[in-house]
Image (cartoon, rainbow, N blue to C red; front, side):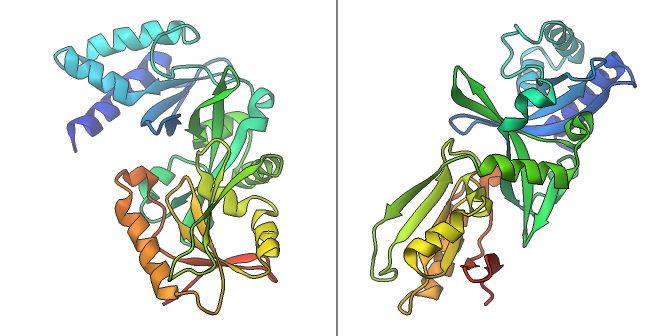
Length: 286
């Protein structure tokens, strides 16, 4: 167990002891606008519609700067929990009642096997070799600020399960515009490529699941589409054609995988195909 993992466990135990066994404690992950990612403790307190979020990495840094004194860390935690709305701690805030944020519940895609351990704490649904996860998009002054993956603790607070969150996230996705950028054609891809993401550039690869998006794009191209995962935040679409180099597409999928330095952003090195007549996505097998 690494120093960070040991600290994570000790902090969770100390926080649980402080708030009492009646409070629920879980873990989730957060992305701030700009790509910064951290793990947080989701803490459901005595107020049925509120939950506090604690940035574990930030407290770990504080722990290292204060001679590894966990008591000092807990002094900081208790102070900030007492006034979570006004603390200067990074992204420590209280989750609003469900009805206030339901319109900001979105879906994302992550690789299943690579994330098997972290998925234990997250609400998710299987999809091919991937997992559909759910997050709350956080906005400040009308601009996207961060995303919070929905942990089982939070879903339980709302009385929601994976299927209910999936239906709500799809409903929200149907109201959101997507972003498509046409990329330059080359000798391997004479039909060109389309980069697909969402307007907030967060978990944009899940746009392949947004209602009607692939059907519409395939209709414009009048053919099926190959899908290359470019990471969790976007996907590359290639119109199927007689001259399409499948080997090149598979190499490109593997290349995207190698280029992704942050494992949390890694999606898949596989190639997929959208079959328009079936409105279905399948993996392109060897």
